Length: 514
Image (tube, rainbow, N blue to C red):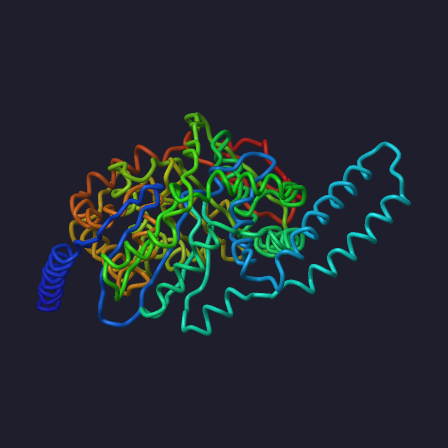
């Protein structure tokens, strides 16, 4: 009896502490971001942080794979590579000598392709073109200064040089000493003005190799690619950020240049600065280097709306690996009030060793070695995803059934107040940690500005605090339904079905990927 009383007292004390910590965080998180929009449409977001003499700067473009179309899928990611190839003054020993060679390279590539596509190709002509192409490329290699942008940044103390491409945006990162901010502005404005697509064809081969590594030879990459391809039948979230193989192989430089002109303009870009700088001087600096870059026509918004799903979809992928499976449910876009409850729901199910999926599938039933759930928070309606791997000799069907049991339990049994507050505090702690550094702040401000509005950060914890146990049950019932779900499994042999899945009337129609 005493032991039980001590446990109750301890639990109550922890609950009080968690509520108190939450209150401290919520009151302190109000970012004072200053905004400035230039005449050409370029937006600058500034947050001062003077603890160290560093400025974390980001240039984010509001363009990602969602803005592509069949035939040029992967072009946004390809640009992530091309933006580091230099400009008319960076990356070349002599641009005046290089430019005619680049033009001739394009002409030869087009001529070889046209000749090969004829009914009766002239092999001698193809051979002559190919020989000349090799000569031109050898001359180009002698003019290229490899990785000059990286080397220049590193010599001046920059770090964190990187880039990333997502479905909704493209992000370029740099952390620079405060006294080198003007160097950054000079380099980045030149990349926006004078980008040169040098080494274009060899870089397409690099992207193809990346696709083979991360998707075609990766069970998890293949699983996620197929999940989106099956879950979406109309919306461009259905194709992968890295692009389809045939598009990467056949995209032309002319198509890429047109895409750059349309989307990589100042009116479609956001610069984020977080660190040790003076905002007034920063505005003048950006005006000096970026102000003369012309505004382009506003790029088109995605018009396609994914139709409501009215029945379960299933697919199997044949691949020589351990089995994996994924389940996806359609959910709304960023800004929708249900996303906060869905965020809590995903954490309740899979965050940490006390989560429901871990305790049930991994610890108690021992049928899985991994089970995780997450919300894809995006500019347009996206997915709530489960991924799991069975523990031998159990199957993906066993794990799938276990996940559905946990979902159905949650639909009828709301989380306790203590469990709900614990999850909220975990989410808040993770959120606060992501904003713990100047670099993290710059990343989050930039990402949310691309998706919606950076002010999402200032309202997130207040909105999260309003989520109730009934809200969690409601969104589970609303979105995690059979007709709204897509299931994809990695299997070694096609055609195998467990008795459990057959009894559940799982459709036999599948998609097989070689």
